[in-house]
Image (tube, rainbow, N blue to C red; front, side, top):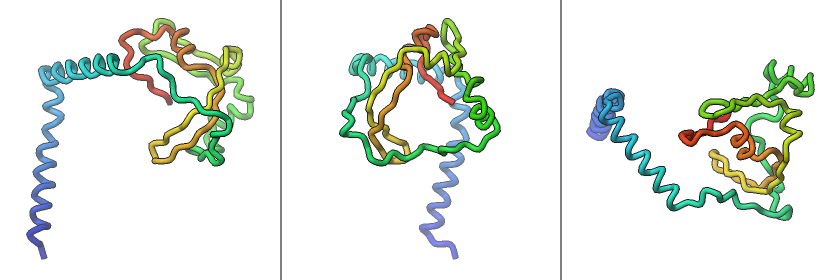
Amino acid sequence: MITRRGLIGSLAAGAGGILMSGCNKINADPMVRNVLKSADGLTMRAQRIITDRSALAREFTAADLSPLFRANGTRLPAGADYAAHQASGFADWRIGIDGLVARPLSLSLSQLRAMPQRTQITRHDCVEGWSAIGQWTGVALKLLLDRAGLRSNARYLIFH
């Protein structure tokens, strides 16, 4: 039996679906894209005015370290690529930095280890809702991006 509430909900969902199907056409319109691009630029300028671009994450002391720090993912990857890297002591592993950079980089683990290292104790806020304070040591991302010559029009970093 169809209730009045169920019918109204189904009609609303159907209408929403029909309206959403037109979003791709709207997004493809050059005029709409220009308006969105202008708003995006305004947002970016406003953020730069009100935020300190040199600010780093808050640092904590060793006494603040969380007693439990959950693994994000797995501690023992099962893929063939990982097994091969592990067997070679990660001798063939490389990190690539490319895209909107003046000098694309491909660095080995030994090259990274030869660079200046920084240790910091900061809080990790996971998208899954938990947080923990941990200690990390490694090359500062800024050093790598400076070496690669990050272009001024680069807006996002993608890690994978």
